[in-house]
Amino acid sequence: MPDLEAIRERVLAVRERLSEIRPDYRVRLMAVTKFRSREEALAAVQAGADVIGENRVQEARQKWESEKPPCPLHLIGQLQTNKVKYGIQLFDVIESLDRPRLAEALTRGLNEPFPVMVEVNIGREATKAGVLPEAVGEWLRQPDRWTRLKIIGFMTVLPAKRDKSLAEERRIRHYIREMVDLWQAMRREQWPWAPLDHLSMGMSEDWEWAVEAGSTQIRLGTTLFGPRPGDGQGP
Ligand SMILES: *Cc1c(COP(=O)(O)O)cnc(C)c1O
Image 1 (cartoon, helix red, strand yellow):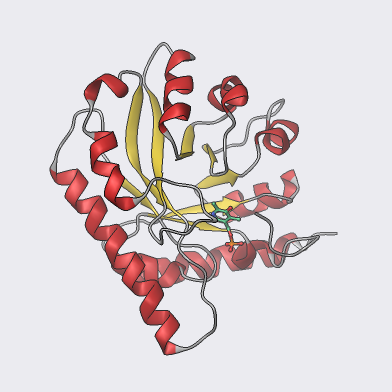
Image 2 (image 1 turned 90 degrees about the horizontal axis):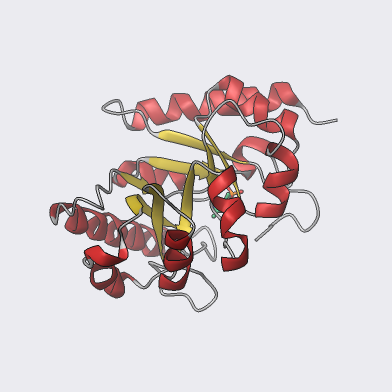
């Protein structure tokens, strides 16, 4: 049996820490609920999580299709072009827009603007999805590509810490800073199709650093729910 009380307490603790670090604005707290039950996810929302994030369309359909969650539902994992229809139906925001082909497939399935975040591979890691930081500007500045997508922000999965050393902390904080700089530079362009109000950055390992630097949304799994079942890591 999941310990729902423990989940609620962890959400409250994170919320408290968020308002300490950022008394100036409310950081959006996403509960990442891959491999978690509906009731665990709902306990987190009840205690103060603002958004639910799911990685897989199939899992999200099973959990949320017949009874929608009481908060926005975001997709944060890879979307295959043949599942675009479900992506649009089920989710309020697709945060994992990671390639032009997916943007084209989404556009074909839409009649009116749909909110997305562009996923940036800020660490330039071969194993990670996302657009390289140096390619973001070129992709975003073309209005004919963005007729039915509204780019409300950037999402990034930071490189993982290799150990708990200060050198690693510096390395991760460097990517965080680079991501904030890129976000701010793109916002200054003021493209009507890309208001870029959100920066979805920070997971269980690094969320405090991300929030200190200006992240507007963090995505927490392990910190709220404990280690994931199975391999403990997930995707
Ligand atoms: C799993 C996952 C998270 C949450 O990871 P934790 O380290 O458990 O907090 C956040 N974002 C994405 C894209 C994920 O896949």
